[in-house]
Amino acid sequence: MKFGVVIFPGSNCDHDMIYLLKDKLHQQVVALWHKEADLQSCDMIVLPGGFSYGDYLRSGAIASLSPIMKSVKQFADKGGYVLGVCNGFQILCESGLLEGALLANACQKFVCKNQYITAQTNSNVFTRQAVIGKALKIPIAHGEGRFFTDEDTLKRLNDNEQILFRYCNGEGKIAEEFNPNGSLENIAGITNKTKNVFGMMPHPERCSDEELGNTDGLVLFESLLNNIAG
Image (cartoon, rainbow, N blue to C red; front, side):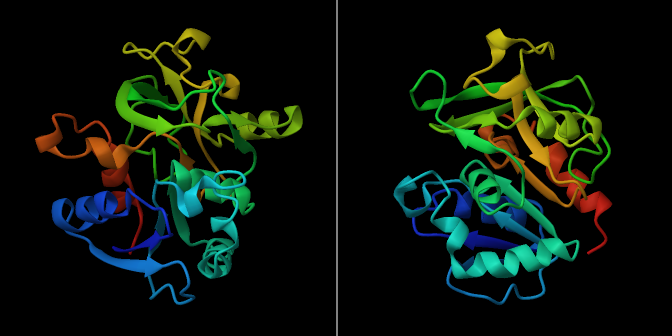
């Protein structure tokens, strides 16, 4: 597959993602500067974590207006695959590619730690190989990760199997006490109606290398590689 990793001013997980995709998974990867419009015939676009534009206004709000996002929207509308991690998830919501919003953490503090999440569905290429109910230890690092939406949208997300992950404990139990940021229904990631755009607050690229002592995130990237015909 050919991946395009978009770099915004303030991105700080772009090279983590590039390293994983290129050096560990041996895929073709190009770095796409946010002022570009050409997606260079990529099979999948990745919006990495970080603090695009310093997180001024709302996190991801300014980046959603970057020139490249017009091309990303057109790409997604035609069925192209897009993944947003942490700040990338915020950008996807701000741009309208995903529903809902990421609000300030309920604790009003930046949270950085290992966090358990569990996949909720196998109905998409991103979580198809994940075991539903099994806890994955994935790092989080965010100040605005509290997923929120209205009741009608929440019902639709549930009914259409668009909720990718929920926060849980090490045994896969989902409960408010294991929710690190106050997200509605412990939601940690969602997809769009056509299931080609994916957003999640935890960082799977930070736990997909044996040298880091944790490879729980690898199943998600392997699922992409095995289920997308590039």
